[in-house]
Image (cartoon, rainbow, N blue to C red; front, side, top):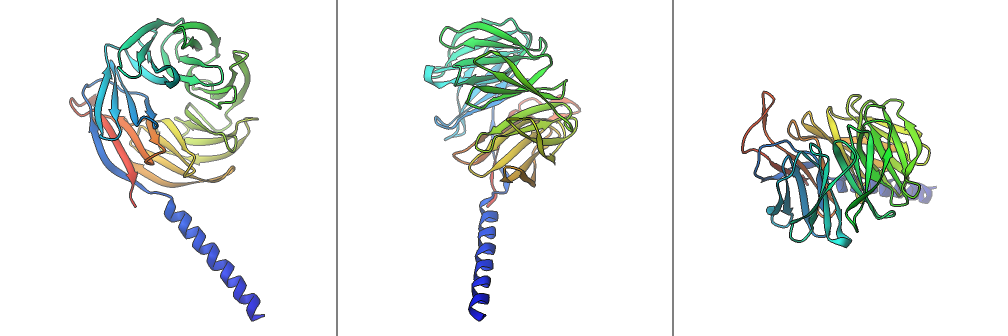
Length: 335
């Protein structure tokens, strides 16, 4: 009996030790530094290239290119118009930038940052832009025309469009032939088959209002949809659209990322914070930190190499951007 009891106590001790170790490995975040950048216009998406350690920061009439090793700007694509998103096709050494105010996509050389071509798209107000590996195509989601323009990166020409039936926000590919896109005004996620170039499913969001950011965990087949007006993060089964969980987040959310190594979902909330959520299993989640940021910091990027969070923004006073205050805030582990 004593030996059995001792074994039970040992198992309990090991379980407690394992839980403690897992908790220690989950980082708490704090401000590490700020990268100051020029210009006083509005900002939107950030795009990170962990392999080359570069951060692309959209900023009204330009895109800043930051070396993440030094935290210094190493290039700038300028003379742009209402910049929103940035997509990279590294195999072709190209980048693509959406210009929302003039309905174009700027193509630039990844190495020199020189503009190669400006593509006029048929959609109105191109915003989110992604590269899909399966179709080998660029997809520019156009908010005012409720459509997506498909661009061939080999020829830098628009080859087709897809009507969406609502105002698109962020989109994410599953790298298996599907793209998931939020329709903000319809409170739904549309599923695009890239081979068919059409919508094959629509997922109505039961408890989500004004979906903006979206990301995916391909290992569990879970979609994470951040909703601005309902202030919640929905966890959906990517195959069926069934809602498996719902978590409270901060207001004015725009972006969301998934960190596969640490199993974290992070939302950037424009009210001035970021919600950090731990994934304990495919259907088990909990909020573990509300990170204080700055009002207006609504989009983010995440480095899987350094486990750092990057948010862009400037100081805002009485609704006005304060000159000379724009930059990227970097948040890292507090441990």
